[in-house]
Structures are given as C-alpha cells and as structure tokens.
Amino acid sequence: MNNAAKDQVWVVGVTGASGVRYALRLLQVLPSLVREVHVVFSEAALRVLHDEEGVGISPSALSAEKLLGIEAPNVTFYNPRDIGARVASGSMLTTGMVVIPCSMATLGAIAHGIPTHLVHRAADVAMKENRPLILVPRETPLSPIHLENMLKLSKYGVRIVPAMPAFYHRPKSVEDMIDQFVMKVLDSMGVPHSLGSRWKEPKTE
Image 1 (cartoon, rainbow, N blue to C red):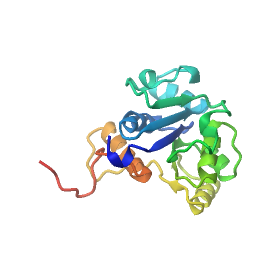
Image 2 (cartoon, one colour):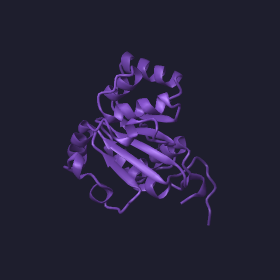
Image 3 (tube, rainbow, N blue to C red):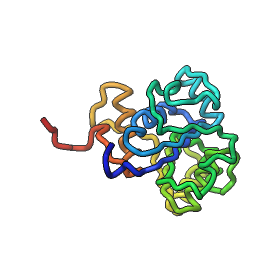
Image 4 (cartoon, helix red, strand yellow):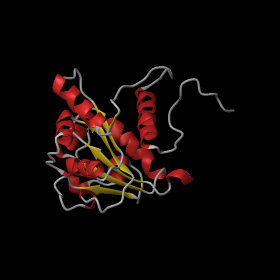
C-alpha cells in the first residue's frame, strides 16, 4: 500500500446506469491502495449488474469475495435502504466519495438535495461536509436537464468525470479501455496507483 494513501477512507456508490464494469474494476484495485472502502449498490445497480454482467445477488449477500473474487477485509457493503448506516452520517470520517457509474436520476437527486436511498444520502453527506465528491455519469445523449445538473454540481465543487474512454494508448481489449478510465478516476480521487497508460509516459525497463 502506498504511504500517501494508507489513511484514505473512500465511499463508493454504484447506481443504475450502464457501465457497472467500471465500478467492479475500481473495487478490484482500490482495497489494496487505501485503508478502507465502503460500498453501496443501489437496487437499480444490482439490476444492471445482472443484466450486463450476469451476476444476480441481493444487497445482503454482497461481499468482496462473492462479487469480485477477492478477499478484502477492508471493504464493507451496505444495503441501500439502510438509512442508519455509518456512511449516512457526517460523523464518519472519510476522504471522499465516488459514484461510478452515476445515473441521471442519482445526479438529479444529488443536485437538488433530495436523497431517496443511501447512495444519495452518502453523496449529500460528502457535499455538506465539504469532502471530495466525484461523479461518473454514463448517459448519451444528454438532455439540457442533465447538463444543467452537471454544471450546477460542478459549481459546487463536485468533480464530474464522464465515462469517456480514451484511445491514445491503443487499447487491445475492453479491459484495456476500462483500466485507462479507472486510472482517470483514481487520479481524480488522489489515490496513487500504477494502473493504465499515460500520454507519452516514458517506458521503464
């Protein structure tokens, strides 16, 4: 674990937009980079997980081993209906939160301060406590309402990192594209890592 990140505690929200594979890859690499990871899948995210990845699992059954195939004792999962969870309170000290992918419904709920489940509430906590909040929207085309909500949140200091894969690293597979984008998310989180290829980065022997 990198010394610069050993004390970081991140909340990861996963919502019902397409692109749950981004979240899965982030959750595979993040536990080895930070001290704690606290994860909330919305019910819609679990539906997308089933539709896109063929994984059917209930909120109560979520674990790093079952979902990711890894042992990660520093990862905690929460039921999206548990409004009394630790991540629902600002008294829980965290480094920040990332919502990946972020649905337009979640974007709107956060932008207007109307939480309806634990992902929304945890994001609201990050904002009110002035902690980093990173949203990874995945939708196209974008309506004026979507764009207005993104602009509003950006003005409040929320970092908007749209799920837009790059191609300068000449990806050979979907996994290469996923890693390059998750690299950008980790950079936005301020988590040191060695994932992905950077533009014109010197090759090391």
